Length: 381
Ligand SMILES: Cc1cc2nc3c(=O)[nH]c(=O)nc-3n(C[C@H](O)[C@H](O)[C@H](O)COP(=O)(O)OP(=O)(O)OC[C@H]3O[C@@H](n4cnc5c(N)ncnc54)[C@H](O)[C@@H]3O)c2cc1C
Image (cartoon, rainbow, N blue to C red):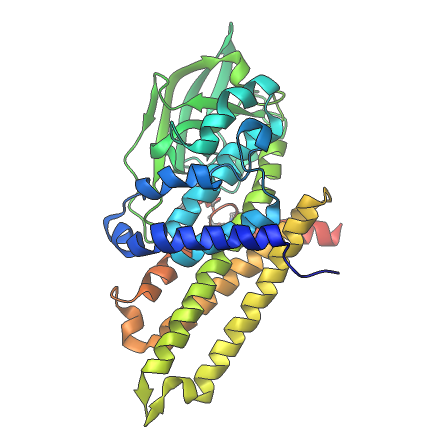
């Protein structure tokens, strides 16, 4: 068993780290306060390969392995949770279904521009105002075939990147009879008539990442915008989410690492009872626990990513990694605030933003409860 990153993975980490230090970290606090997307950084991400992580090289992407994707998302998470979320939503959710299930023509048509972000990003629209966890029972957005076109009507909610995307992969009910074979993924360009993207939600955290509600009013797209076969949408979505969960786990680790660094830095400066905080055993134990949990989460993420790269089943491991990493990161950020005392509660210190950002990680791409259901199902059967 080899726990070492390859030379290529180390170089990739350094490149992404340097990029994040220059382009993401300096603006993170301001963009969080203004709830603004980091347009400038995203314009530079394409050439670096960050927008094409889930796109094979033959279609203009970086085609990096899953361990490398996780490394990049950790680095992004360390500097700005919102920017990291928009990257994983574009790459792991928006581009991945086209890479995995698209025809040759669809891949040639959409992937090269998505890899560079020239016309905008990609989004995946599953959630609706009345349903998130229960897609099979809950999805009401319907697509009906009329001649050579799908006609889509319905609504979606909380769709990351919708306002900055050129296309939205949309989960639609194509068979009114319902059931697990009644859903399909259809690509909807954002300039299609009848598609209304509403103003970005006002969020607690990950505020540099826009999430929008969408209405579909007689939206017509060509028949060949369907990904794969009609009726396969649920299975395709679950496969995509397995990969996305590794990404959310990786962002969680990045946030936890950053929080730990902030806590250590602060504890070295602040004095109580005549010594720096860092000298108190209670503080050292919080730091030791955080370091231990981060290390454990990292191994779980690398394991799930390695299984994915090896072409082995990784659904259970991705859920375990996401569940552990996101809940661990929330606790680490909580304790990092505790170490800061009152200043941890101030927006003058970055730990306050990290705590708000990390709160999403146990909700997005399947809540902790849904991860436990996935894990239990596989452990029990
Ligand atoms: C910032 C942000 C970005 C997002 N980006 C996207 C995106 O890009 N695309 C997209 O499609 N969606 C996106 N979402 C939506 C997200 O995926 C959903 O919020 C999530 O899947 C949960 O769905 P829900 O909010 O409808 O909760 P619900 O499904 O209504 O669940 C509510 C609560 O009940 C629990 N629960 C539900 N069913 C069960 C059960 N059987 N047993 C036990 N507990 C249960 C849940 O765990 C949760 O705690 C985003 C959400 C946010 C906040």
